[in-house]
Every structure is written in structure tokens, then in C-alpha cells.
Image (cartoon, rainbow, N blue to C red; front, side, top):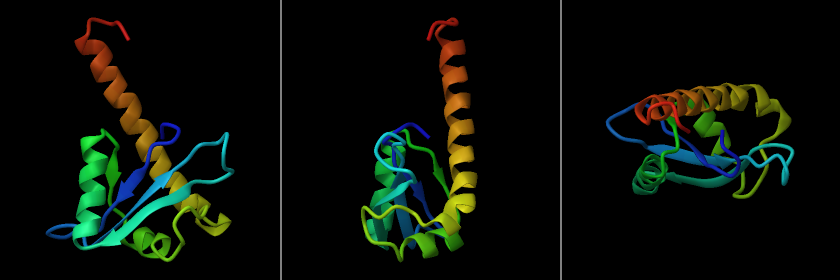
Length: 110
């Protein structure tokens, strides 16, 4: 995950019913921090903002349910590190793939 970028997650359905956004800046915090959470239209807006800003979005309804119980600006607790690490791994892979595609399209520069 890019430093300071949120990570939005939404459950599978006809539209997100619940979503959260995390940010992680190792210089500022020892763990990712909950930056946004919401249900219904708010959840849809979280996901929309993430997508519009090139932030990878992944779905994990169980994790969203747990994370939504945290307070805003609260670091995730250690017992969630493994689950969130799986999400971060997805983000890093997505980021690398996107960078590779952009580099290939620009003729190797980048």
C-alpha cells in the first residue's frame, strides 16, 4: 500500500452495504489506521472515492464488520494484523502490476 493511501473494502452484494478505509504511514503509526467507515450511501461513497483516486478496492465482509467497530483514527489492534496484512499484500501486488503496465505503455520509462 502506498503510504497514506486509504484502502477501501466492501462486502459482495448488489452494492456495498458497509465499507471502511484504512491508511498506513509507517513513519507516523505502527499499524494501519481507520480513516473512514460507513453503511449504505456512505459506504458507496467511500468505495467511489477510493476507485476515483486509484486506490485498490477489495471485498472482505467479515473484516469490514470488525473494522467498522473501531473508532475513526484508531490503529487496528494486533489481533487483526494478519487479516489486514492479507489486504495489504493484495494492494502491493495491484500497485506493482499497475506500475508494470504503465511502464510498458510508456516504452519502459517510469
